[in-house]
Length: 376
Image (tube, rainbow, N blue to C red; front, side):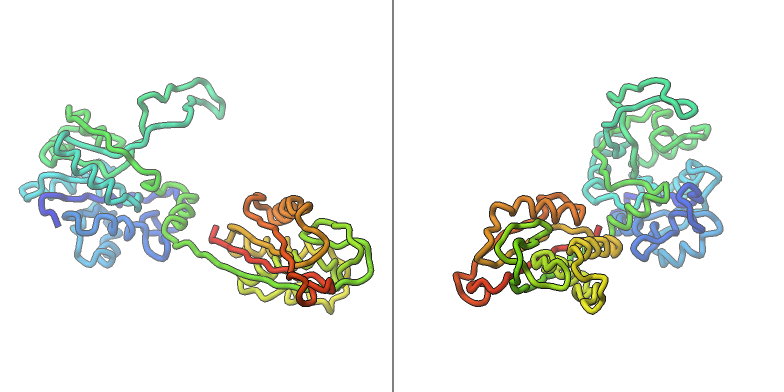
């Protein structure tokens, strides 16, 4: 740990815009308080000072286990920062980083960039250039445009040479939005360091969803399906939701779409939800002659309800006839439409069994399918 570097993490606010019963820094993301993630980002980097509301001191001690200096926060963020800076006077600290406790995901690369920039400037802070168009508005109406050239979205940690930022805070009348504003008012030079999209500040309820997605590991599930249907008298077969002319039909309780059944079972399998028969029993007369897209659509909805999306699906149809190639594109589009995914995520192909077995003797059609689901 660098004894000349201090990190001040501000967490004394109440964060009412984020909703919830507890202040946002104490609400959990992936089972841990937001503040725990923030502290972990700076672990081993330097001395940590944590500004807290007086009511949160015991909770802060339990969280840090004595690994951080706890500072009672003031009425404003600036007051909290100054309280922490005053504690550092007379120490070995020459540089200080000031960071929002509700910004839990700064990368080490960015932190090092801020620290390195202090060799050239009085201060340094990460920021992202504004890329969206900017408007001015009143009462819900656009009243004008604001040029975005030279505009940046400020982030933290904002780093400073310690003696300079202490004097700047002592001289400032208060009311600053951040520490860069305090520093500029004191005539300090501030370098801009490239910020990061992941270094967002939790402010609104939706930010907790984004934070969970950032922390939660990707869950990937793989399922496979296999189905067989025999031929019977008829003049067409249903395959992947497409009516294909043929001199026979497929025999089944529903429309006997063997390929769609295989894909449906693949999705159910990835979810550990059994097969079509569990959800649509063949003993139930309401499914007699039913369109198989009902089954596939149900499997797709179930995946969504469980928090997954279909990354890709691959269907192989095994038969001598009918020829699948002329219909493959239409089949791909139909399956994609039923599942609500882009066609490029669905593959439909065919092969023969070289005249071997029941498919080779044209007694029926087999189909195999694989589906990959990923956490949404």
